Image (cartoon, rainbow, N blue to C red; front, side):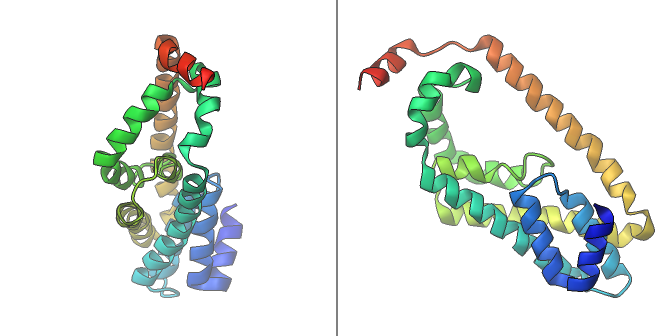
Length: 208
């Protein structure tokens, strides 16, 4: 995959960086760690300018972020209510949790989006709850842009500084990504074990 990324960036420059980061956001298995660090190496060799690399990566990723946000917002969490009621145990949530989530998001959504953009694995998923819970677009866009810019800057500068040792970026961030996946999986199992359905609300919703 790295060879393909290198060729596209060499041939398409900033447009290639933006396109790859868009794909990475829409299709997470394409790693931003590889894309932005390789773009940073190109900047260190004088083929690209580092500030423009960061701007291109941020723009491409933000386009993907907006696609997910708008799609989730168009769907809306209300349409998922029958699914949540029926399969709440496996989602480890009931409708009361969704309502609490909406209230929490109204006050803390910007922080969630900003810090979420700085976390490997999680960063590509942040737009979905923000859209489903109808976070204000302006707040989402600002927090998401700042967080995304921070992430792309970190990777691009690392690639710029490391040069040929760019593999060190992925080898460093890779274990962090794996640790986050383990924590998320453990959290899901814990919630699954402790899940208690809200019978009163679920019975009321099914009788509507």
